[in-house]
Length: 215
Image 1 (tube, one colour):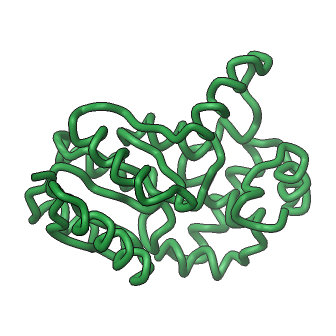
Image 2 (tube, one colour; image 1 turned 60 degrees about the horizontal axis):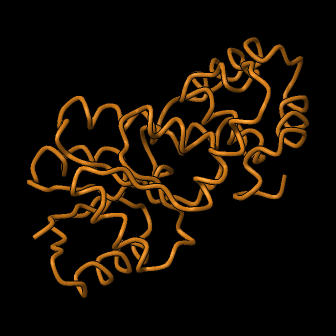
């Protein structure tokens, strides 16, 4: 029996995932969480094989959360299930310690296959994401400005490019507006951009984040 934890801030998504897994032989959902803090509490208290994790919950940045989970529970396998279909997110998730990456557009059968593969010690990536990885091998060698950002800076960049205000970002990440302003200043310096509008133009030019907003 594969014991699974589910972490997603949307009740309907958690209900749907639980239904899919519990209607499939060999799976048991042993706990659920809705944000970063409750996810860590669940991971510490529950005995499970796989955590199905959303990257965009309130609280701690999703990639940072993966790192903390792997530090505290290295044996727990993590399958990221997210709306973000961009390669940049998948790369950061795998580097942080995830064992699988799946988008929420995936079919139920693929979710079951992914959880099974990850639980057995394997690595799972969707066909579309594998194609992105393969295509990236043909890109010129060199680090683009956004690739120099830390995981938190990259998350703030994504939110700014999506049109969120400093206050909105601070509320979503459960930090102060001053902290977000500091991150914004830092990422502008790292990317050598003069202002926020330049960040948005950069995101448009490099086709970043286009699957979760209208950039």
